Image (cartoon, rainbow, N blue to C red):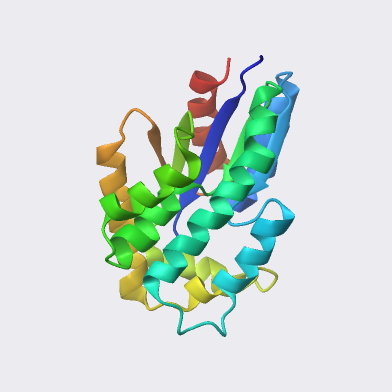
Length: 209
């Protein structure tokens, strides 16, 4: 059985990872790799339905544990239905968010505990951690200003959280960077898209050969 490479992309709101993914896909395909681009929550029908519930701005009463469990459920279905088959075919999988989003947003920023949320998600994906994670780091003020300027981007329930919440998310990601230094690679997402792309490609060159 062929074994592909699983790369997740992480970051706070407005970090630019979703914008960069098509450029990374193009680079990898030019190098001769088959690439699957997908996202969380979503990527397949069942998970996209769960995504609508999670991110609907009307669902402001959603309990933090409910939120964490819904993310884990969507992740499980997406992982077994889309990620595993692609990896078994030897593809490079670029996933816009994965387990670290739950750890930073629900575990750290929501105060559920990183270890508790990690446990839920290890049950969901078993040993299915990414081979590498690109973390696009940005100050929340800059990231949120980018969202406000981008009129075509969907505004979801998490975008509407207060600034203090987004600072907690960033703190959570930086803690994860210390916890998983072999897997998570830091990228400064504040410069131009060209500079950020250069950083990302340099890291990917060391991962995908």
